[in-house]
Image 1 (cartoon, rainbow, N blue to C red):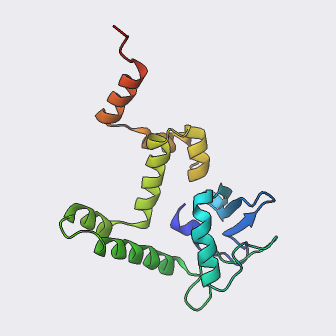
Image 2 (cartoon, rainbow, N blue to C red; image 1 turned 180 degrees about the vertical axis):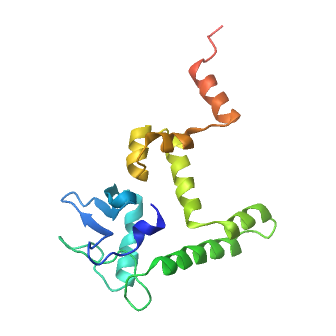
Image 3 (cartoon, rainbow, N blue to C red; image 1 turned 120 degrees about the vertical axis):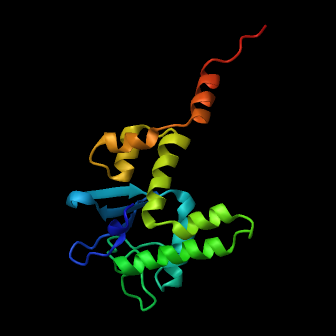
Length: 173
């Protein structure tokens, strides 16, 4: 998601989470161009999201029709753009301090990281690492054009070699 998509909009009650009958969570946001987007959240996120909700005094699972801010400040209100940015940067900084001292490259990367860096990493993971079809990745990322999503499909020599080797296995001799 974009940072702006996580900022609470009181008039639209977005972003908010809905839980369906199968207990699957969907995050509803207002994307670029004022387009609403529904993003399915993976089950792997549920323990952390439930723990967060309990920590801020909410029930672990959203009630049907709940329209509350997704992310809260320490005072229980919705965080604005600068507060969200500061929280993400604080997580990057904390992660950098937990790295081994000799891992200077990763430490520097985390110290220079931005919220958009996470988005780019997610996009590349979807398209390159997991081979998610471009139209699906486009919908998850909220891109207006599949060409924007396709830009993440650029592969390096190692990925190209792995594909070629996997596509043309050696014949049994």
